[in-house]
Image: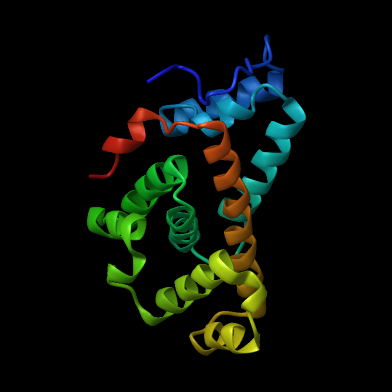
Length: 188
């Protein structure tokens, strides 16, 4: 495995802008590493800032969805798209947040094999349809989410997280992005 976060020759800005360097230090302190997805974007400050702002809003911002539910969405979308980077990174997050290594593995391999409650199952069935055939979403699909307690704002958030990871998966796969080795051992 190479030290490059992707297969592209896009060296990081040198020196990193102070705000980026500070963000990377925070990642190092909180996560024990700088995720390769952030390192990959470090060649362009505007792109890194746009990616980070959207990620932080969708995955960490205020929402009726729990952090675990958002990570579950990330894993299901990434599994459908066969995105190596995101399956590894977000599978580790599901393991850590749930305290259940088997759940993280099931989410990556086949979310339907996981022990899920009705809310999670409805959410992930919707995410699967968004990922495979978004033009076929109809009111009955949204109503199925409402029936298990999701608000319209929650439905927006589910769709937004799924859409963000569809984009991220494609960029990661197209650039040969590699997951940090640390992810493989986390929460097992």
